[in-house]
Image (cartoon, rainbow, N blue to C red; front, side, top):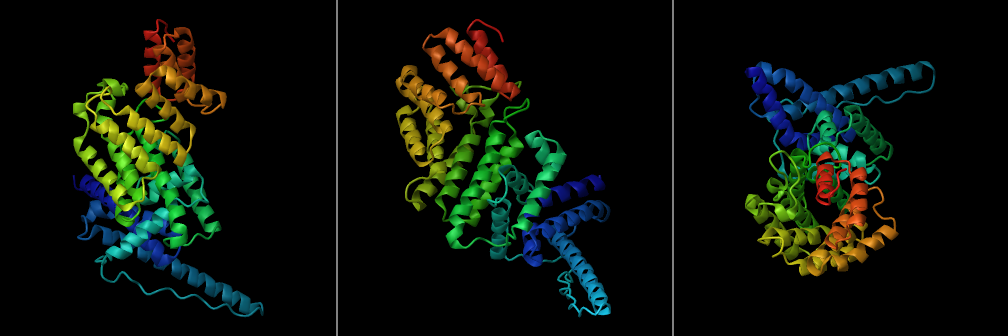
Length: 431
């Protein structure tokens, strides 16, 4: 029991404090890659020590102290190596190289580390900016953010994205090497760069949530752990950059979307479409939090940004008593504004769905046909799925069947494929 309790304590503390610990070590060493390695070493030592000796009085301070001691050991090894190089150079007549000196041991307090709240916030924010740096690929940003900011293990990340653990580890290793090669400093970017770089951070959090809320593959429609981690990261960001309206817009979007999770799947995990969802099961506390975040974004900003507009759309659904009672005309207007601010085929497709609800399927089909003609979303099941639904409502059953069969072939998620097959069955054909 003591062993299990100690390991559970390690996991809990690590999940809550890992970003602060890695951030503090990065500031202390000036080396992000070394800091992450040191934090992992401290974690490994805690997994051995805490079950055996008990959980320390200051668990986070204990981990930070161990990490700093490991850093000092690394500095001393490097110093000794420099001295050997200097001796060799002197012997060869090439002059001496001044040996580096290890910093004083900061860990004499036995783990009672004092956390400066302002410095912690700066450390964590810097960590998020580094993990989401534009020099990294999208996949690397997601993996590194979940690892160093979210505190997830490589196994947990791999399980969430249904990829081999070795793939995740390779992405993280490659990301660290890329950051080192690019000499990315551990610091919050200067004001001139911050807004642009913040967009990358928000995008990574949004990508994590999107994969959690609508899994692209596998046999589960929703991956709650991944979606919840994205919401947690968004909440952290609102504390770190409280004056940025789009941070609150993103949080609002995630809260309002997650509020529908309890009603989005049936008893066996099958998808439940919006019109069939029991709205009494929606998370009203999440809706209140989302609406409060959206109101804050409206107060501090000069008009809503892309995430704020999506949150406003989600709010329309959240406050409507039914699909028919939804203010679809407002939803259409919000999608039009979003399309001007952040144009994309997905926005146009969602606008078409809203138009079909506000004005009927005949008004929406030309929007979808334009996307088909432009060969947009060619590898996604979403476009043929929506087109098949519109054609079904127009009574063009044969064309609808062709589109839905195409959507089944493209869909990577087992639960969504089952839903598409049920629609085909309703048309009088099996797939």
